Image 1 (cartoon, one colour):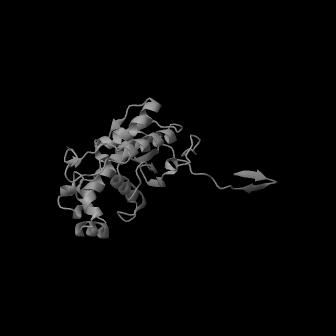
Image 2 (cartoon, rainbow, N blue to C red):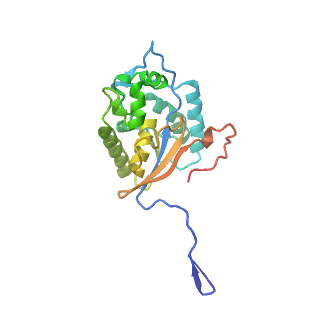
Image 3 (cartoon, one colour):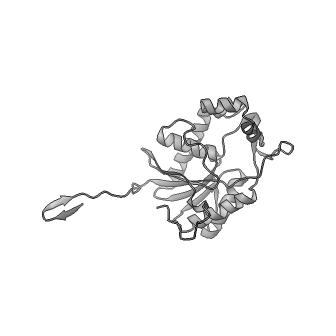
Length: 234
């Protein structure tokens, strides 16, 4: 608001997180190694746990380069090593220890765990077709029920927000989780935000009253022309 010659004028203002809110930068892990039906991924609590591919390690370095110039108050990863490996370069640059938030692990894919999911999707299996048409992971036999997945993701986000008011967190997680978070925040279709790229950054602001979507699938730091002077996310 400004006053000019006795008149009051009101300028447009930039978005500012409200007092007590928490910013979550949701980073999808870097690309993991290819799935080989002859050599299933090792499992952690029943979920596939591949390591990063060389391209994924490049993704991790580019994320670190992008976010090292940001204010980051804490780093979080999941129980699956591809998130920890992606977070490691940034945590090292910032001198932070990554914390584990197990409830932000990927959706459980039932009998398609261990890498089989990729094969079935690539071959356009009828169940994969139904999964996309109905926007439900749990059409896969044995997969995590949709309501359960949504509830655990919601509780994890709320827990982080409660523990970190007025802070910004770098949360290294998975494509299915990012899609679920943004669906909950926006009230969208379940798969409206599916397909976050490896190494991408999405951004929400969480308060007790609402979740605000600020960006989805930011990959500017992955472009060939990316430099160390990339624009900050604030």
